[in-house]
Structure formats: structure tokens, C-alpha cells
Image (cartoon, rainbow, N blue to C red):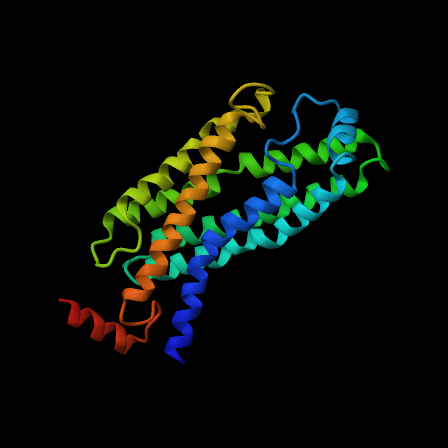
Length: 250
């Protein structure tokens, strides 16, 4: 296999994380009118009239794009797994990171697809049905946070255990990732808060949890790309190359 091409593919995968943050942020937050999302206290009729009908075209476009752009998180997570795998003995942290990343990517795309449906059907079916699907998507989007929290716990532990140079994930970035994952804990009680900082449209989710989530994805993606540029062999070398590399590094 052409090592130069493989290296370029890996670098592209690493930059998919920062690209995801930028492009998904535009499609989901701005076009999708999710900053902030509609008031959780809206009645079914108010939700349809003041949100889905009012912004129908924008929501359909923005959330449709999100169903595509959310998958940029997948190659980023897979590339990070490949790099962690090379440095682990039993690979448990790599597997936790991979599983969490895959499931996170799925949530990032399935929920926008449901909001597209809500926008498309608004005005033609019972508003109560629209509100039901709307909240089902939001609860899935927010309350399944543990799949990402498990992922970032693995990343943080790896950052502190990894002794090879250059490092893949700086320790401070691992701590940032862990903080982001733990900051989602209050969302466990999301259904009980319709107002205030812990509500669906509250300050905590958007200005603490979501922002730190975006930051650690960008930061780790950057360091992954830099690591790939500095290492002398591909992240997935053949056995002979790996042995040669380890021997020369002693």
C-alpha cells in the first residue's frame, strides 16, 4: 500500500473532527434554528406555529445537512482509535473510544432526521404528534450523553497513560474532554426542567457542555494531525515496520 496516500487519508480523518464542529455547528445551530431551540413550555400548537412553520425551509435544510455532516465525527473517532490502538497492549481504551464515537455519530444524525420530519409534516398532521416526535428526538439527543462520556473517559485515561513521544492527546486536552463528558450529567434530569439553566434551551447545555465538547474535538483533531505529520511510519504499520520502529525508539 502507498504509505504517502495512507498518511494523507489519516490526516484528513484527523481534520474531520474540527470540520465536523464547524460545519455541523452552522447546519445544526444556525440553519436549524437550534440556538436556542424552541421553548420547552410551548404547547403543541405553539411549537408548530412559532417554530416549525415559521422556519420550515431553514429547519429542513439545516437538519438535512446535519444528517450528513454529523458523520464527519465517525472518521475522526476511527482515526483516534487507530492511533490509540498502536500504543495499547490490551486495547480496552481504544475499543471504548471507538464504540462511544460510533454511537455518538449515530445520535448526531438520527435526531436531525426526526426534526426534518417534524418540519415537513408541520401543519398537515396533529400538532401533538409533532411535539411528541420533537421531544423524543431531543431526549435522545441529550439524554444518551453517557455514550460520549464513556468515550471521553477513555480518552482522558489514555492521555495520562501514554508515555510515547510525540503524544497523541495532551493531558490538558484529555482533562478538557473529561470535563465536557461529565458536564452532561445534569441533563439526566432534563424532563424535569422546563425553565432555567438546565432546561433543554438553557445556558448549561449550550454554553458549557456543547462548547467544551466542540473545543476538545477541535483540539484533539489538531494534535492528531500534528502527530501523524511527525511520526516516521504510518499509524497502522506492518509488523516488521512496527518492530523496527519500537527498536529504534529505545
